[in-house]
Length: 48
Image 1: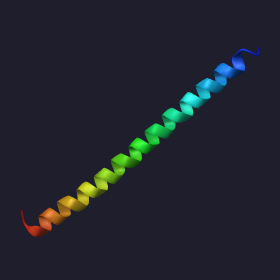
Image 2 (image 1 turned 30 degrees about the vertical axis):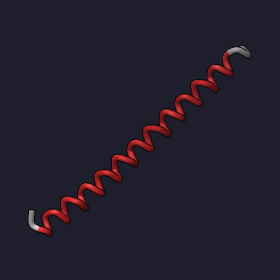
Image 3 (image 1 turned 60 degrees about the vertical axis):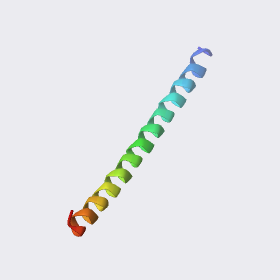
């Protein structure tokens, strides 16, 4: 079973990188939502 361990390591690396990219995308999305909410609040305060 020495062939199995490198492939498992590759799978783990791919899995962790996918999770990292998903987390960064979620963080970016949350930042955009916060900025959008602040922007819409500013617009409603100005009175458009």
